[in-house]
Every structure is written in structure tokens, then in C-alpha cells.
Length: 225
Ligand SMILES: [Mg+2]
Image (tube, rainbow, N blue to C red; front, side, top):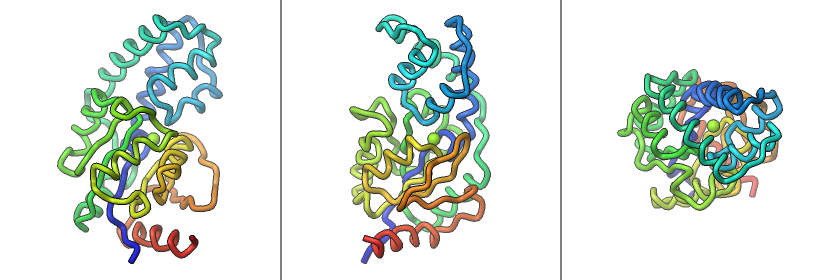
């Protein structure tokens, strides 16, 4: 019997409307570096992880990514994003209710984020630590999204098979990561479009999401394979 053993949630852009905070901080950093952000770089950065994100930014801005420059930029962005995350971060539409519905059904949940632990802790202040059996951050695995490491680690911590989980993601990078790990993927695009692919299910928002619907994603996939 194929069943839904866990729901794995992305944080930025999926549960929290925090991509906007990142966007603001990155834009300011580009200014600090004497450059201006472009839409192209902004899109490439959505869902990217710390070190990768900085390399994409430096490449896009035409700056040399020396180790010192990357370290400085990393520290700058962490300070700025910490400031921005310090207050309550707005939820994405329907996210709070969807999280509560999965919890009420007794299905274990994990937070699986490309954001580092120190900043994720601010996010958890809004999300409620008690909602998650585990949380995994980009600085706790060898490689962040789009590599599968974060999702594999989350499934391991929950003691479930990735094939029996649904990952909920907003970005192409996140969707690739969850697919590579073997999770069924529900995509709710936030800032940018996510390409349609076999096995990806889309929704406009989390409003009205039910556990029956999530269970259906696992059944559909096992029927298709
Ligand atoms: Mg995201």
C-alpha cells in the first residue's frame, strides 16, 4: 500500500513570503558592490543556496569571485537578511492553514530549506517549531538544492522513504532537488514560473489544500510508475 508518510516543506516563497526580503537584500548588496541588479540575475537566484547564490551573483554582475570577496559578501548578506527576518515574516496565502491541516491529520512534517540554519531559526519563529519533526538547512548537508541532499536527509531524519513523501516547492531549483530525491512534488510558483514536467503537480496557492489531495499525489505517482 502506497501511503503518504510525510510532507516536506520548502520555506522561502512556499510557506513564507520571504523571497522578497532576500530580493531586497541582494539588490542592496549589488549596490554596495557598485553594480546594479538585472531581472535575469534575480531569476537565476531564486531558490539558489548561499555559496552558489553568491557565485551566480558575482558572475551576473561581472565581478571576480575571489574567496575574500565572496566571504565579505556572504557576511554582508547574512547581516542584512537577519535584520529583515527579525520581525514576523509574512506567510504565503493559505500556508498557515495548510500546515495546520497536515498537522491535524497527524502526518509528520519537515522543513527543508536552502537557507542556512542561523536564518532559518528566524523563519521558525513565525512558522512554529512545534509543527516540524525535523528541519534541514543548506549548511547541514554537502550540497544544497538543486542537489537531492536536503530532501534525502529530511526523509532519513523522519525515518520514511522519499517515495512516500510529498515535497511542496515554489522554485525550479527546489522542484529539481525534490525530484532528484524521489519525492512527489507539488509546485506553487511564487516569484517565477516553474516549467511543467511529467510528475509535477501545480496549484495556484496553498489555499484549501487538503491531506486527501496530498495523498492523491502519492497514489497517482505509484499508478504511473
Ligand atoms: Mg523556495
